[in-house]
Length: 298
Image (tube, rainbow, N blue to C red; front, side, top):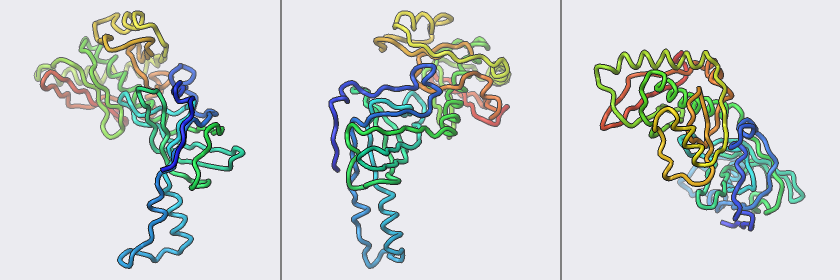
């Protein structure tokens, strides 16, 4: 592979979504601080006699070119990197700089936690598939709007589960959130006796829908560690801040604040159209309680 990296990577990538306003920004202009073009093994491969070579030369060349992989690092991005229980954003990064036209379909966004540099990996749709986009080039970042909306709803709904648990008197510390559409859930430390699970499930379902109907605004703020700990543990000692350092992003959904780096809806009312809700059964095993949720359950 060929590639290059600029000194700007020392400062990492600015994550626009971390502020309240930035949480809803789906496009931005950025500067390339690193670019790598993957090895073109597929493009250079010639089919053997045992392989299907029926495709026209132009079609084969086009297919090979469309599979050229690109990894871009930017000084700032509107895309959310996978992590914190939330899937990666997808979208398009395009350039019409002096170096030529390029368009890349971004399939995966990741962050290096040591350097805070974000990598956008995807497929070259348009451009010179031999040459990386030059460091210093200006690019336009566009998040896939519908996908982001769905992922933000899924993450927000997970936090509404937290608030519903609190409203039902279950002050169990949240330990894990899985906010992927193939079966989202939230886990808590503790246990629910078998004889109490059915009644709790019905109460949680009702509490969740009440919180959606109340259309409670989401707040996002970055606070010093001691203040964040005070805000997040004001009802119960739900969060351990011993592993945190520096300022902490605190998201409050349905009145339930917690440390979080994900993207969210403006209010709980945004969960109504897709019918988000809690689904059973409640699982409680080995000191872990799992509450599942999803759309089309209202």
